Amino acid sequence: MLILAIVLFVLALAVGGVAVAGLAGKLPRNRWAGVRTPETLANDKAFALANRVAGPTLAAAALLLVIGGVGALVLGGVTGVAVALVAVVAALGVAAYGGSLGARVAAALPAEASGCGNDCGCGSAPEPAAADESNTDAAAAAADCGMDSCGSCALKGACLPS
Image (cartoon, rainbow, N blue to C red):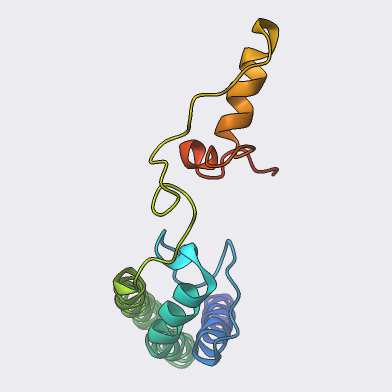
């Protein structure tokens, strides 16, 4: 039971940390934590707002995980495991609800000018202008990778270095 309780306490600490950072607007866009949808990752403002909205529910999820850990320690046996399991399921549900709220808020934000198809006036990548026949593939790649006026529309950043 001690190991189960420690795992729940560590998870509660991690979820609580994300909740506090989200509420404070200090959670940077990242690969691991926060509300991560295409709408929230579109810009820093959307990410911060979505995580500020989801923050209270993430804090509630962290509290549920703490309750599950305490229940596992105090009750022990099958009852303690059952309480921990119910707490984990409830925490996941509450966190998912908050994440969906945050994602909807971010999706409702007006789109910012991106320069890629939305507002650059090209709609799609222009035809590449090749200097000679041997360089046609390179010219096409340059157009797709945004090395001309609007070629980045075609691949939407797929050519960026990893």
